[in-house]
Length: 311
Ligand SMILES: NC(=O)c1ccc[n+]([C@@H]2O[C@H](COP(=O)([O-])OP(=O)(O)OC[C@H]3O[C@@H](n4cnc5c(N)ncnc54)[C@H](O)[C@@H]3O)[C@@H](O)[C@H]2O)c1
Image 1 (cartoon, rainbow, N blue to C red):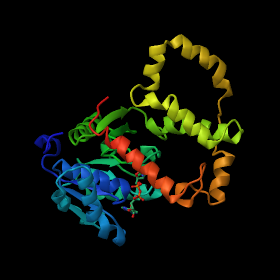
Image 2 (cartoon, protein in one colour):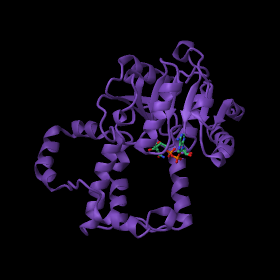
Image 3 (cartoon, protein in one colour):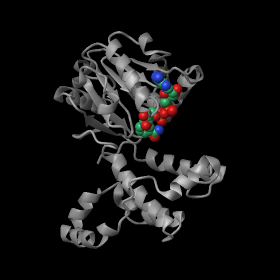
Image 4 (tube, rainbow, N blue to C red):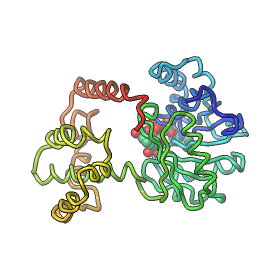
């Protein structure tokens, strides 16, 4: 990654990030570290107060000059942002009405040629941009958490997104060190979350049906195909072993896989009982504060070791 961006990409213009939470602040850090002036819009005063401290922490974690954190401005409203924004990343809570109102204001307040990008996890981009008049500049930019470690960004072509917007968004994301991929259809969950949740649906179904417990599901994934997924994708793996094997397996197994079209009872019951995961001591698995911290540390170490990896 270059220390400063090629001038023609943003023409020296600033970026806007709407939402100063977990994702918004990390996206702002990535942009600032690449030499882009960034303004973060965060309506919550308490969150604004801790923003620079959290930004500094990310700079430190990435061994990047933390004095750059001060180039990130944090404001309460989009109207306080700079007038010449080149690209806006929306990273507000996952609520379609809220995101629609933000996009309405972005269209009103950003220059007509500014790219308007949303970091939504699963909401189709066209729903978020329903009220935007010029849809040619709207695009999905789905980062993963934490984005400075998990570099993929799904760049989603929505209804009306121009090829120029796709290309500019991809060029900017690549220039700041991310790994953009094209998503050609604006469908719920894009690519990564569809794959991830297809796996989770079957995992929950197996536990619910009494085939095994949750710990066994996790062990099977981690100790079998999960171990190779970072090296070899599922379709590469199919090609490598030969497609006739995948065909033979699918002829037997597909009709038997879970096909629930609504959240499964096990998940609904756990949430209703307040067993919402590690923070409460119980979810699919049982947790202590120590076991939660230990898993987070192991994950950070493992992912941190792969920061520069290209595949
Ligand atoms: N956390 C993840 O793992 C992850 C990964 C990829 C994408 N996303 C998506 O990114 C988006 C943000 O997620 P997050 O985890 O950062 O959430 P978060 O709750 O940490 O941050 C959201 C921030 O937006 C602020 N906000 C609320 N209303 C706002 C408004 N009107 N204008 C501007 N800001 C407003 C909140 O105060 C909060 O600080 C969501 O769409 C989420 O689905 C999250």
